[in-house]
Structures are given as C-alpha cells and as structure tokens.
Length: 569
Image (cartoon, rainbow, N blue to C red):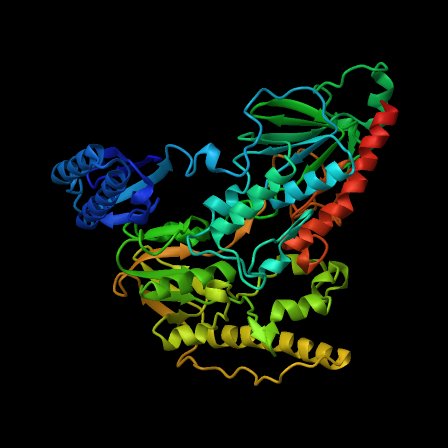
C-alpha cells in the first residue's frame, strides 16, 4: 500500500511534513492548495480515517500511523494556527503530495522497462520518449530491423497516469486506437477509453513486443557530433565513436550546420550515448503555461494548472473559476459542475464540435470523408493550423456534446475572456462572451455542412437531423469585473495550455519561434526526426491512428540514415 508524503506551511510559517499510509489522502488534499485552518484539519481527519479503514480492510486492524498523524496535525493547529502578522485569515498551504511508491507494484504493470543501468557506447538510433509516439517508432524500427533504444524519463504512459484527471476519457472512439501492430481489441469499439484503460492499452502495447525502453532516464541534451565529412575522414577505420566531438562555431553558418553531422551525442542522467539518428518523440506540450497575471492572485486563493487537476473533492470548499474553454477547460468545468460545485468559466475562442450527427459519431463521418488525412499544406490556415485550439467535446458516459449554453441554464456562470487580475482579487473579463459562444457554434455547424455535402456526394443513406438551436443566450456581453472573494471563489484553474521546450536539443533545427523545422517529421538537419507533434502531417497526427501512420513514414527514412552510417563507418 503506497504511502503519500505531503508538506504544509502553517499560518505562522511553521513547516510540517506529514505521511498518509495510503493514497486516500489524495481525495481530500490537492498539491498547491490553500485551505482555512479548520477546513484543512477536517480534510486531514477524513483522509486519515479513510486511510486507516483501507488498512483495516486489508490487515484486520486500524492504522496507528494514520491516527498518530491526525493527532500531530491537531497539535500543530493549536500551536501554529495564528498568522504572524494577522494580515489575513489563517490558512494552511499544501506544498506537495508525493507518493512514496508507485501506484501499482511492478508485478501489476503489464510492462516494465529495462532496469536502471549506466548507459554508454554507440547505438544506431535513440528514441526520446516512451509514450505512444516513442513506442510506435520503436515498433516501426523493429519492423525495419534497426537497433535502437527508447529513453523515458518517467515510466511508459506516465502522462496518461499522472497528468489527467480521474474522470478523463478519450474524445475519439476506441476503434481509432490503432497503434502499429496493436489495434483496439475490446468489446466497445464505439466507446471511449477511460484514463486507466488508456494506461493499460499503452503499457500492454510496450509489453507486446518487448520495447527496448529504459525508464527513469532523463535526456539532458542532444548534440551533433562534428560535421560529417570532416569527422568521418579523421576517424580511423573501425574506431569507436566518442562523445567529445561537438561542432565548432565554424561548423554553423547562419544558424545552419555547414554539413551533415557525424551522428549525435545523447547525454542522459544514466550516461552518454552516441548514435547515428535521434527521434524526438516527446510531443509538443512540454511546459504548462500560466499568464503572469496569476501572480496577482491573493495567497488565500488556490490556483493550479489544468494538468494538476484530479477531481473536485480535494479542492478547497467554495466556488471555482476555470480560465479557458478549450478541450481541457470545458471538460474540467463539466466535471466540477457534475460534482455539484459552483463554477465560473472564462470562455475563450476555442471551437466546438458535435458528438454525433445524422445517426453516427461525427468522428466516423470525418474519418470516412478523409478529413483526418488532409495534409497541413492543404489546410486553409496552412502551418498556422498547428496553433489552433482543439474542438471541445467529450466521450464521458458514452459520449455527448459539451454545450456551455446548457451549463449556463443549469447554473454555471459564464464570463468573457479573462483580461486582468488585480492584487485585491478583482477579475476583469472582456465583453466577448456572446461572440465566442456564437463562433464555437458556427464551427460545429460548418462541420455538419461538410458532413451533409459528403453524404450527398457519396449517395449515403443517413437519417435527417435538425440543426442545433441555442438553448440559452447571455443577458450581457460577459464583460465587467468580479470580486473573487465576494463571489466565494477559492480556486482558480488555469486551462491555458502548454508551450514547447526544446532547449535541451542543441541542434540548429528550429525556426524563430522555437518550433522544429520539418516535413512530416524529417527535420532540416540530417539524422534528426520528430514524432507525435499536433498537425505533424495531418489533423490525425495527434491521434493514436495518426501517430502510427507518421511513425511508419519515418521508419524507413531513419533506417536509411543508419544504413548510410554503417557503410561510411
């Protein structure tokens, strides 16, 4: 039974380290949250009682450690509950919750990576990232008989396990889960996998072909090894490749390597490797983005990024403001709403799509019509499509629309885009709510237009369906100010996306915005490839089926690099 360690700060500045004998505490406390003292003590009591009950059910006796931790927190509340300056109501801040052991034992995981060991020497290909993209690349390279390793800084499927909320599910139907050599084999092809089912699917995929994954290995840098012709000529025949041959300043002209590198050095926390080719299979969502205005929120307000949200229960009592209405923001707002929380949603410009239309899931219509196969070069927005927000919809409870207007009818408060925050806790919203709702609906209707046109062109028999009629209209433009404290808002969830961080890739393969310059994953620098990026080649590139196709395209090109290196070396 895994322990959970957590650290808190009391109002007088005292820091206390605590331990729960099980994960039960995670349903009562959230990392980064701030609670009034009495609420914090109540939550710890409930969490420790639940942890003790788990121990009793498993071992037949209550957990003395849980009871001792309750008493320690109660004593701390008596001794440290008064703020040193008395300037604000006394609160307790939770710095972190950390599991002392994995949520499942190694024997319970379908896949275990190679045991931690010192890495050294040369391998033809290094794949960075052990998610669905890296595993798809691994399977495809194995089909090409190319020796390689996969380096994963956490564990396989880590982001699915740790960066999704409890009720998370896919928004694409299960039949679209077709990783190379691993199609969906369940009995609900039109359903939507839940978080733990996704983890099982990805882990079982890695196990199915014994992917050469090294878990717990962080890649700290990827560096080119000199300039190809010069380095190859200076290395004696049969000499081992070393990691001391970074290119000089003379090798780089106008930010571009003067010649192809002689392979790469991959530096990691487990040692350095040399290789002929590197595949960066780490996606494009690396660092959570939170606007600088967040720094102005009073310390009594809990604020977390959407990637840290797990459920409504551990958040402080009170209303919640969700900032951003993209896929995550809309789904989290729904999750809070269904949990009975009072929710305020700052609505942005993200589009929406209907779950079903004319008797089928809209995904099925778009798949059949080839929409997911549209290359980005043919998209009306061109490369700009890579920066567009995802359409919001949900697969929850079998799949349905996310209709923000209906949420408003049911009591959710909708605002325009969050424009500013003041240090006194006043939020200012832009007056664009009506425009944003109308624009999201218009995108959904245009998608239906495209479906209608394809049905007519193909002569497909499909039932007619009435078009969407708005069920609610805002009484105002959603602008103005809101006193968060007066509205009872105790938590702000920033559903404001992610940014890429390629700073560890010391190769001139990026444009002025820091995005990899590539065509279908083949970058501008020979031997360097990317996989798993949104709109890498098509809209489908961000889906399980799309990443499989992209990996299949890259594999023979990676193999060609290793074959050329073997011939030259």
